[in-house]
Structures are given as C-alpha cells and as structure tokens.
Image (cartoon, rainbow, N blue to C red; front, top):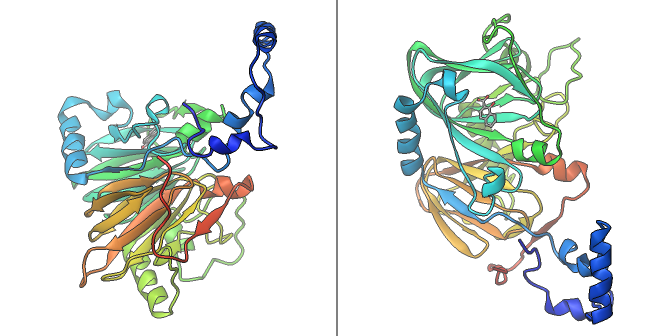
Length: 374
Ligand code: 1HN
C-alpha cells in the first residue's frame, strides 16, 4: 500500500529523490535486485512521507450490532475450545494483522455465568473496559479483580490471567484492548499456558485497589519494580467523580474537553509500558476543536451520545459504540445532548510514541480543519 498520498507534486523539489528513469538505470536496478539490494532513491520518497501516514481508516463499530454477534457466539463456541470467546474489530485497512487501528487490537469478549476461561500469559499487554453483566472477575497473578460496568482493568504483559463469571452472576461483555499487533510487528510476542489451567487466588479480592486506589495516597514501605501500574482496577464511579471535580476546577482542553489519564500511582506515568488510557467528559452541548497527533486511539462511548469528525468523516455515536482515530488524523468530538454529560473512554499507544520520541501534536486555533488528504 502506498504511503505517498498527498505531496507527490512536492517530490520534484530539491532535497527529495527525483532521479529520471533511463535504460541504463533499469538494467542497474535489475542487477541490484539479483543481489537482494536496491537503490534508495527509488524508494526514498515512499519510505519518508512528508507527514506521518496512517494505514488505518477512521471507523465506527455500532454496539447494537457488535452486541448481537458477541452474544450469538455464546451458543456456537465454548471458552475451553476458543481459548477466549472474542469477536474482534478489524479495521478495513488492517485486515492482514487483525488490528483495530494502527498496531492495536480490540475485541468484545463474552462469558456467561459459571464459565471460566483458562489461565495463560503472553508478552503482549491487555486492558479491559467492562460494558455489561455482573459477577465477572479476572485473576491477575493471583489477585482477583471484580469486573463492573464502566470499570477499566489491567492485565499487563507477562502476568498470568484468567477470567470467569460467578454462577449467580449475569452474562458479561467487555472490550479487550491489546498491543498484540505491535508485539508481533516487533517480533517479540510469546505465549504460555498456565500449568494448572486456573490460578489460585492468594490475596484478598480487589486488594490492588485497597492498597493503591486511595485518593493520592500510597502505602508506606512498599517497593514496586514492575513496568506497569500496581493498581489493577479503576472503577467508573471514582473516575466520573474525578472528571466532575476537574471540570469544577477549570481543568479543560479546547481539544479534549475535560480529559483525565488513568495513571500508574507509583510513577504518575501511563498504566502500562505500551498502552495508555483515558476518560474524557464532554459537558452538555460541548464540542471540541480539531487537533491531530501521532499515535492511535480506540474510543468507547461510556456515557451519552454525540458525534466525532475524524479525517473529514462524521461518525454519530451512542453509548458503547467503538470508534478509532488513526495516527495524525484530525479529530473533534461533540456531545449531542444539551442536558446530559457524554463520557468517552479511550486507550492508545502513546507510551510507545513517547518513549521512541515520535510524539507530535498539532492543534487548530480556527474552528475547521483543513481538507484531510484521502
Ligand atoms: C487474550 O489473552 C484475551 O486474556 C483476550 O482475555 C483477547 C486477543 C488476542 C490475544 C490474546 C484474554 C485476546 C487475547
């Protein structure tokens, strides 16, 4: 797929590769090819786009459609056979790597009461945003974490994890976000099945929240040297209250509304090494200004309804819909309601961009973004 969309006309400029073709050159290229080599000037403009190029298409998946298909899978496959009963979201331009956007993965997992999915671990990191159900839980390295709608939960790379729904619970649905395509692109992913297939819970339930979930309070005398947050669950109610408090304190951005990052309380940094996450509040009638940045973002509507303009395309959304914003794509969001809040959960690959010093951001002071390239 060509990454030279806009700017081909500018490739005639001094400073770009602009070698005119000739018979001698064609013969030369043929000889290089036989040696598994090539002339840089034949590919330079292709591999050095003027601006960051997104391979993914801005896309929205309707929860009303996803939910029906995820529930259908309940009667079609058992978690013991499927490993994980997940319907994944496939970006129309990322089919070959099963990515939702950029190098991120997203899927809808469904489990019914009494089911357990066996324990495993992998190099890739995972996160979950819980949509519906009760009695769901995940066990992360022996710590049980209960799953409630609106909660954001971590299963960091390298940790043993298995999930289940208690017998007396209700069918649970949640979004799984993973960095699997990234880990595979880096040729660094691996997978292990737990020797006992299920973990024993060897800590009090939800202990990570007891220890690390206080308001800006941490236990004394603990040490933590893992590359992810010791807090494994971020409940919705506390998140929503924080957004309200931030709004009252005037903490807002013209591009994001009131947006709070989920943080590793130990470092103040992103929750995991490869993926960050956030929740943003669009107040009644609020519309943000367009901006763009490197990094890919997958949004899920946690509350309310509205629309986003992404790369010049308008997407109307309602609760639980999922949509994505590919790298360097102009985007803006609007709350459709003049009386109710809208909340957007999102996860992203920003930690990777930041660590590799590839983060770049551009905002607009005017109201309308320029025409986005196709
Ligand atoms: C995985 O391990 C889970 O543990 C869910 O629940 C989705 C998608 C791709 C690869 C591994 C899970 C996954 C996954």
